Length: 458
Ligand code: ARG
Image (spheres, rainbow, N blue to C red):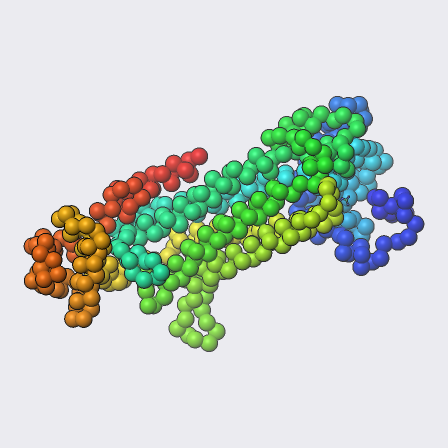
């Protein structure tokens, strides 16, 4: 007769609703490979301390590999009483190799097992996530390198501010993502701490070699405190908060691109591949890809906030509340990976309209340069700011551009204005003056490109 793994002390049956409520197999089965790997390593460690003979270890390992193969080929058949991936795998192992399967869990608890599986699984996923992030940054950097000639208005408060190179804007977002890449890499040592061998809470009584286990499973270190080992989920919180930040960067970039793709701006056109139409308005081409990229940040932060709330106030060590770590983490991993792939496609295929950017460049965005011109003639900036402001007001009153005021007009505002004033009204010259590190001049764009390329090499 089938019974639950832990059924010994029970006489009553589990309520069917409770059974379903408790069951995590439908989502934690995606950790099947990590669970098998952890068990194979654990079997080895049991042999080393004489709990298993070499022969038994081989049988268990072969059994576990067979179970793993069933998962990989989609033939694993869950039994109604399987609670989670750990009980499912153990149940199946014993079906395949008999009572010997029951030796595997010696000194182990699902508490150290699940924490190990989660870390192992996440370490694998982080590599995928990182690859997606790198590809996105690469596309942005290559695009920026090619499109340095395009000059557009840079905005503050969404009001035209100063001319910038389009590449400068693109790279500003790439720098956010590059910091995310660095942050993601910094999470790895804290994910890579091995709980296995912590037992249920107090530690392993059979003296398994945990450093050996860490080496077998590719962990960088061993959890030094068993209570911490089974109860810590900080690595999940950290990943969720990381994912919240990077999708927030995604959202901000998407917002820029949505605005630039409106007919009113017209700086860019999204490729058809990443746009959708309207069911009613035949003319519409909507930037759904970007809107979803913007929207997903809310979902990811929801996962972070939700699990942090679950985590808060838990007593030490394992509590079943911790099973609630899985769905938010899995969802965040999936969402963030999809976002990187979609953003890479969107940014890689959008069309840029430099002539529209050029048309948006009104002379008033050179008002700072006008003030700077007088600074170079020795006048304090606070005064030149004021004089330039009066020139702007005058042009506004005359409904003309700054370069359409006469030299005489300028001379009445300040006698330091001279024939060379025409040099100010040149957008290219304006961006090229920004030669300090971080500026929008061509060489500083080149510098940014090489800094980011170097970061991608790491
Ligand atoms: N499915 C559980 C989880 O995801 C595994 C650990 C269960 N441990 C226990 N003592 N009930 O957290």
